[in-house]
Structures are given as structure tokens and as C-alpha cells.
Image (tube, rainbow, N blue to C red; front, side, top):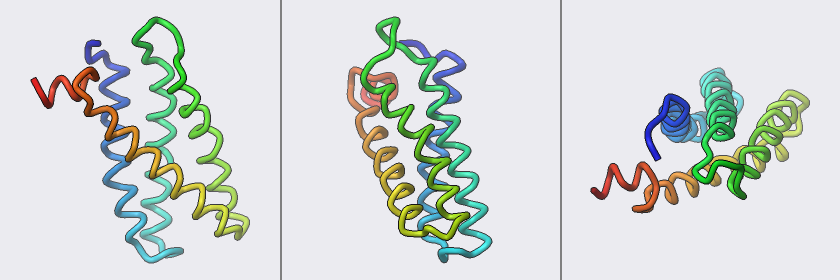
Length: 121
């Protein structure tokens, strides 16, 4: 796989989401800093999920694209949950999405993947 513009945007959004997500989680909950970082993180996650739909190594969608649909669904729902004061739903959904991002990032470093090839070769 080559680093097409879609792949570059996807990777940039995901890497930025890793950093900004960590900062949002460390910020005082409900603070302006937490909300601004959280909004930025949510937008980056949506961008990463959207661009992932344009990445197909076998020419068609794979099981991993199901996760993109999950992110595209749960991020807006989690934001709306926070706006409605359902903080437990918001916290659970955002934590699960961040965990998914970390796990996906880990698997992207495998030698057969583009980032893995760049890292290990």
C-alpha cells in the first residue's frame, strides 16, 4: 500500500487524535480546556473514520470498516450525551473510542501494514 493523500490524512488525524485525546482525558472534566480538546478530538476521530472508508487494501471494504461506522455513530452520540448531562454515557463512549484508537494504532505498527513497514524496514 502506498501513502495516498487519503492515507496521509487518515494517519495524521489518527496520530493527532492520540495526542489530543490523551490531553482531553487528563484535563479537568467539564472545564473549558476539556471541552475544547474534546471537540478537537471528536472532529479528528470523525475525520480518521471517514478517511478510513477510502482505504481499501483488497479493493473492497473489510471487517475493519465496521469500526469506522461504529466511530461515526458513537462519537456524535457521546457528544450529545454530554450536552444532555448524561455524563456516564459520554464517559463510557469516549473511553471506548479512545481505547479503540490505541488498539488500532498498535495494530497499524505490524510489519505488514504501511506504518509498520516504515518503522521496521
